[in-house]
Image (cartoon, rainbow, N blue to C red; front, side, top):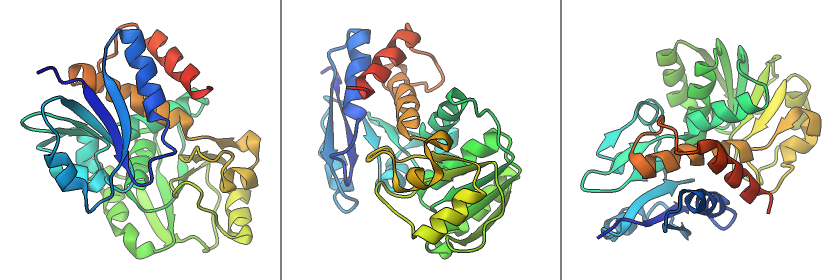
Length: 272
């Protein structure tokens, strides 16, 4: 039986634009593949995954399932291994786990003219923060200041920074910030900091890349100002491009046929 069913899983999931992106790409590719979104919370993940039959080709995973997907994968790509997070599962007898968020962040920033950043601040301590840390390390970051509501949850990021050769400090969100070139916000969509904290972070935060995109502008983007804030839609598009490469031929680095046309169709889908 041909594997042609795909979906994005997460909780919440109603805001996801992934079905539009994937449908646009498969239309250009001439593939009759079905891509839906399904609300799946963390306790239900294992049972839902076990219930999938051989009509299923793959899954995109968002909060709070990236760590669970990592544990479910039989094989992992390099970014999934380093971050402990999987946002893409290629299904089969031995599910293969990938992290396309890292490349999605790098590409989205490059598209905005940001190819390197030496001093970076990351807001948040979850799976996407780990992807952001790997991404900025690949962009040449030498120091990363991680800020979290509960700094104790960020211990794994400190260890990851050490493995990457990046000086990584951990503090709470309200601590006095030092100047950085770039701030990457990985806080949940709709999250807002108190006005004083936001203003102090923005004053010395360089440009803001907020992985959130719904609603936009986010609370932080409003404080930073439209000329200094970048939406997470670019990350969504470029990580999805890599997912489609995986679903098509199993390799996140192998370009799609006529990839420029596919990306153009995906970008158009985000404006409708």
